[in-house]
Image 1: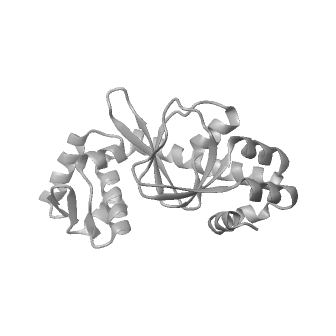
Image 2: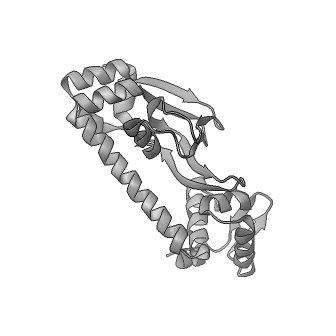
Length: 223
């Protein structure tokens, strides 16, 4: 077994079910790639060239309007694949959104041709592809529900707690615009809500950062 396949199976243990000719094809086809943060991995309207399985790092998949507004659809992190990439490969359609490396990303790549061969030849690989695809569709439906029906104060509280949990230290390093993009709303809406949180003593605001002062209160609102 090659080192590339070994790294892939470490992040995607479910692929160990691919055996026989499928395992040999997977071993021969998989290639590792590393990209720096800020790299645009795919753009709206572009063709899909490869099936990407993230081993380390985070890819932000976002939709950008003609006016320049953005909404984050989802992130692809270790042990995950991109639902848009899968859809493009299965239907040979163009990308409907943009993917950007938020951090340095290490990924395993399968060419479009190898992906098609594996889907055709290996039932285990096919089950893996559709299982992760279904999970991502469920995540997108949750996002639609949150954007359409969720209260912005509740969603913002949840987002702040999530960011603080990732970074540790009770500080969120993010601009108001970045938070607005995450939540699919306008910067002014986020700024007003953060000012209200500050008035209540829940956060302290500074340029490009938000200090958590009362995480319990935020958790009660977000819960």
